[in-house]
Image 1: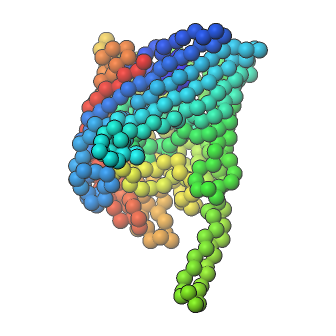
Image 2 (image 1 turned 30 degrees about the vertical axis):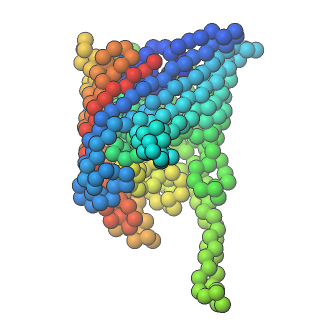
Image 3 (image 1 turned 90 degrees about the vertical axis):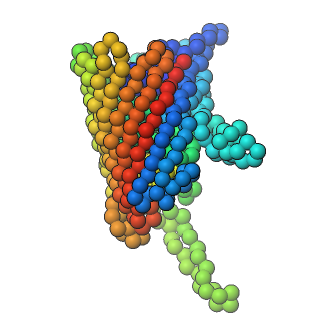
Length: 410
């Protein structure tokens, strides 16, 4: 099974829904090639009220949008290969992601949502080497370490979550309303062996932010996982990066008497920490997660939805948030029913005249039914309350989405 399929399948199985147990495996000499992925598509109806009605980029009307779109997990095709050489397990992975309604680059006779609006995003391109006795090293582009358990434990990984109604190749799940985005980044990282359930990951990551950022980011987490009738996992992690805003030169006045103003470089630290856990007993599952940080995350309306992602350089503003999720799997039927609440907060920008802290609070109800071991039917309802959004914190309102669709793993 490919690395991407393993990660997604692990999250899917943790939620009680089904996924393909293996991709397409092809022997090739000393190598084994794995091909796997998913296709998902949803009908979404999204409505806005309050100040958000007239501030919705990409929406066909100011109050309501109907779309056929991809969910939180874009449709993907992953190609991986693995072998054992000189007492080392060696593997490589490339995964191509695409959205059903992407308008990136769309133009011309086909229109933005037609053939001219399609786009391919290569989010995974990495290799690993190691041994179960001492761990493994990864180099390349893959999901970040900080925040990865939060998104992989989110039930909307199989669905839509917040973010419907706009453009792009995917929605947001609980990104910006419960956790920061782990993102897909260039990295060199180390994963320890599993010592009776205990393990840790540490890594260097490409610096996030503008081109003035010269130093790498650092991230890591420790976790403990156990099985049995009452199974579960607990984890704690952190991320840190120095952020530098480049020098800006502004010329005002007249051509004969120009006035030059130089804003010097500003260096700051962006950092965050997280703690989370999940427990499964019988058909019940519970997830709890919390994060806190400074200088990381940004509030904005992005494609008609709220965003508090893993973006560095919001000054020294405090951020925090988290989510709680409860699920139940109906015995014999396999249908998973889930309810979750989450919130993300960003401290107001006093120097820019913000009137209050940005907050995105969301309730989500989801039903995930395994029609076959590979095909899942999905229904979700999402209600999100947004406060103090946009420039100078001038927008308050609600976003409500109904999503119906399916996701197929292979």
